[in-house]
Length: 324
Image (cartoon, rainbow, N blue to C red; front, side, top):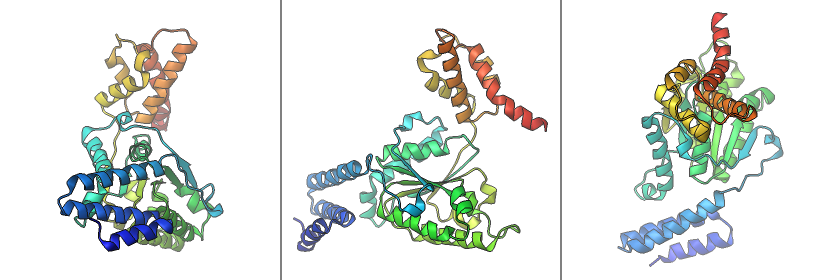
């Protein structure tokens, strides 16, 4: 049975609308029952808590203070993990983040915490932002995207104060918080062209992320890992590296996107040749271009020639840049 202190804590937190305290006490109660050998009851309590947290997070978007309007974008993603076309080793690490988050109460009973602070590194268009959407969907929480470049350029001199407000939101409202183009504030502090303001901003971020104890997931992305301050890496629980798709990834990606539009007799060798050097997002766009062209031209399917043509168009800017 629940202890007297747990019962009193549940009652107090209920009438004071302290959801986090109520949740913590309920999980402590579940752990207590498990230790007493009441496994079924403990499991039922945890299920009730998990379902309540999921319903609370689903579709409930945070209202931002006026000062943060335009800096934080909110959405409720519907992107399942099956949509990710990545190396199997990377997919497993993403699944581990999801699994630990869902089972965080079990880890807490042993004095451990789930992976919450994640750094995603890789070229543009390789699935970093999509991963954040997938995690928000799988964890049934909103996704809040902090536009770091706007945070810096619009509020130079006030950036550290805005960061504090953002981390206050992270503590108060559970969700997935995505810091895109993180190198805008995470640059190496010893760089010669750095300014005192940006050093203070980075120091503030390091302090905020290190002391954060919320239940939110914090994700930072960068295309330029060499610019990041080395002190950042140890502040993250996990660092995931993304790369351009290999040939098998390209085929899976095009099959996923084109679906029933794709010809059954497609010559993959011809198509793959035109996709050399393209990212996941560029291949995605090329496939959608091919589908639109097929529809507007009254074609039954997307064949190798059409798909190769659209891939070639996406590749053209890369070739132009390499020539200059």
